[in-house]
Length: 116
Image (cartoon, rainbow, N blue to C red; front, top):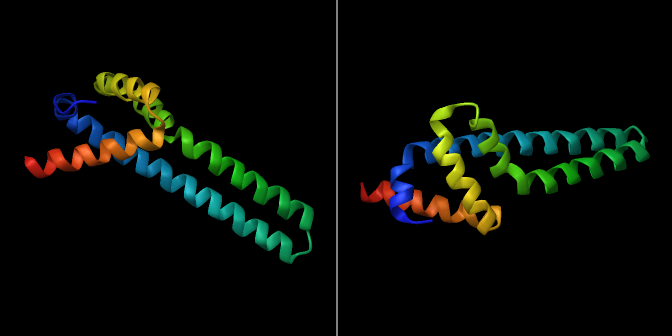
């Protein structure tokens, strides 16, 4: 991940980061809702259903959290303008874990935006 590449793809990467944020928000709301429904089920003495729903919510959160970058790039793949950016993201996701890649990308975008 070099600065020139990021500078060239900056507008597309900003869209990618916004899309990633939207999908993260959807994930958080979904998981939180699942936990609230599980809590309600538990209060209605439906303990088994509450445990199953809470477990499913956790599994969805755990698995999706690691795949959000891939999901976001797949969503943007519908638009041909983002083709080069998607290749950049996928190439970097093969080299680094998603969490590390996103953190480095956020830092790099912030530095480039401040220097412009």
